[in-house]
Length: 230
Image (tube, rainbow, N blue to C red; front, side, top):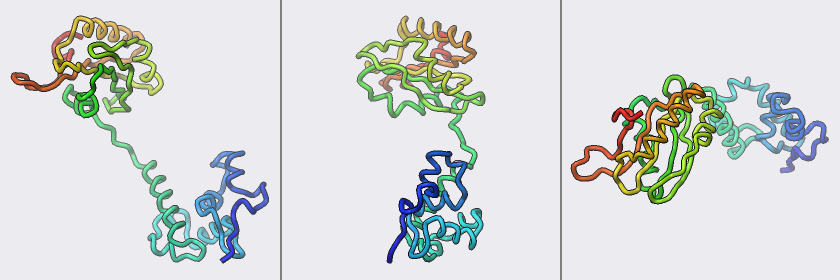
């Protein structure tokens, strides 16, 4: 069967080129669907095929059409139907409220980073960036150091926090030796970062040091806040 590609349309009518020039918001529903369809059928361009789909179903209804029914539509077929369903599902997921991991205790913070950090052979300094409700925005890597030290500059620590509009943060780093006992340098940099956070209105809630669980030790981390060293 002869097909008609979007690139065979006049340049001024091609949805992809229009999107590049004017942005996605400037395109009609049919043009956006045509980009996903890519090709039409004999006698119909992809845009015309999309218009036919929207005559049979509103955009809201089209989202709910079963895959098999969509695949049987003239000019669509299984591959295009799968592409459409995938795009619709992505749009639906974006519209759903996102539940963020809540980080309110040292144990919850450790649960976020333990799997990635406990087996590192070098010290790494990472920060958990939190919103106003202690929801985790993301974990940012600040520095990677040597076997027993990581170089931490306050401006690097807060750079990602400012970009993410974080309300607060939890500092974390690992001790490859396995002993999470804080050093004098750990305590000093923590106090320095707390003061910097006060100036930037970004609260430093805790500094957690990860080690390894050993005989006689109940947990593989220490919280400087719990130790009263903040």
